[in-house]
Length: 93
Image 1 (cartoon, rainbow, N blue to C red):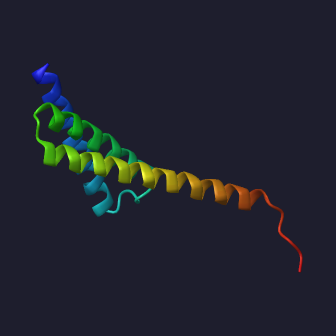
Image 2 (image 1 turned 60 degrees about the horizontal axis):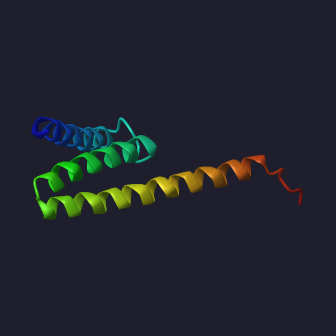
């Protein structure tokens, strides 16, 4: 079990670093891919932190998770509005 928790933690750290590196290097935008990497990383690190009873880190990652979910929700809402605007015929003036 300990090895699994450690692997989960390392995978989470890798996901967060990958997201930050790709965004900082201009390879991705702060869109869905970035948010999903952040979300996955924060969940994995929270699991690891709770297991090790590292509560400050665990709480930080839960907050990071909530922010990521809110960002994904905003992206989905924006996409939905954009699709609705595209399907609405232009009005003549």
